[in-house]
Amino acid sequence: MSGILHVNLKFFASIREAIGHGSESVTTQATTLNALRDELIARGGSYADVLAHGRAVRMAMNQDVCEETAALIEGCEVAFFPPVTGG
Amino acid sequence: MSFTVSIQTHDFDVSHELTALRAGDARVGAVCSFLGTVRERNDGSSVASMELEHYPGMTEKSITAMMDEAQKRFDIYAARVIHRVGLLHPEDQIVWVAVTSAHRGESFQACEFLMDYLKTQAPFWKKEVTPEGSRWVDARVSDDQALARWGIDVSNASELDPSQRS
Image (cartoon, rainbow over all chains, first blue to last red; front, side, top):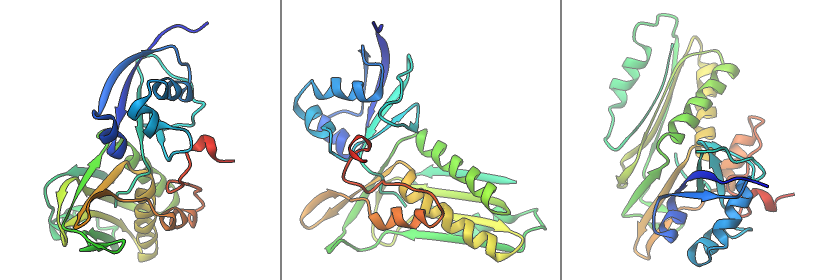
């Protein structure tokens, strides 16, 4: 059984626009990035649209790009964003 | 040894930056820099302006990591990356990468490496204003291919997320 983790969410670019805000704090029973994403998708609406599996969504934990299987850390910052287009 | 990154809304003076980068280091015999500017056309549309967004903190962290990697790969003395964010217009300076070394080969290569890395790894996003409306710029597969030349496999431009790739 898992406990509850506190996670600070960040959204950027087209994902931020669709969701309507750039950050929120959540408590989650998810233990991996992928499970956290699934929790957000389960909210429906714009979350389900822009975070749907198969879409080009990148994830970072504590400002490092991570695999979906990465384990969540208490108090971590998790960001969702589209492919980068700087330079 | 100076390896620095600045993310800023304001413009920068390339001549001043170049002078500062090599000042006081008589080992330097080569300085190579790249300047990226806003084009008036992209993907078939005219661009009136663009808004550059980034991920404060991760941007600096990722560029610092790429400069660390450049130091491992090339014999370079100093490097600087400046990237602007916010509202930009055609002809504006967006990004500047500069590297110093004893001989030109190392700084030429390191400069291109840093730029290839930045295009696919640094968390910046461009939104263009065109006559058809605003649009987020799509990542390019050619940028992934540019980094692959350095032996780094990325798929930033892939339509699919990592869980969908084999």
